[in-house]
Length: 112
Image (cartoon, rainbow, N blue to C red; front, side, top):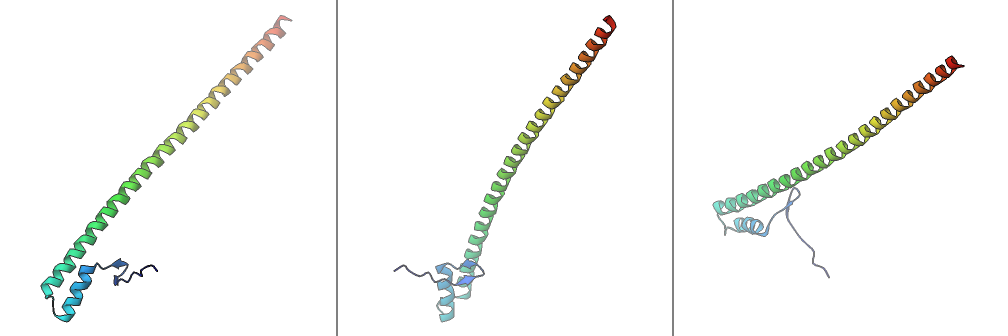
C-alpha cells in the first residue's frame, strides 16, 4: 500500500520537516524564539531563492519563445514579400507583352 503524504501547508507551499519540528519544539518549550525565527528565516530565504530561479527560468523561456515568434514572423513576411514581388514582376511582364502585342497590331494595320 502506498504511503500517504501528510503535510502542513502555508498557502500552497509545503513546510519542510525542520520548520515543523521547530514549531512543535517551540510549543513544547524545547526550542527558543531565536531558534524558531532562524528556522523560519532559513525557510523564507530558500523559498525566495526558489522563486527567483523559477522566475529566471520562465523569463528565459519567454525570451526564447519571443525570439522564435520573431523569427517565424520574419520568415512569413519574407515569403509574403517575395510572393508579392514575384506577382508584381509577372504583372509587369504581362503589361509589357500587351503593349508589344498592341504595337504589333498597330504596325500590321499600318502596313496593310
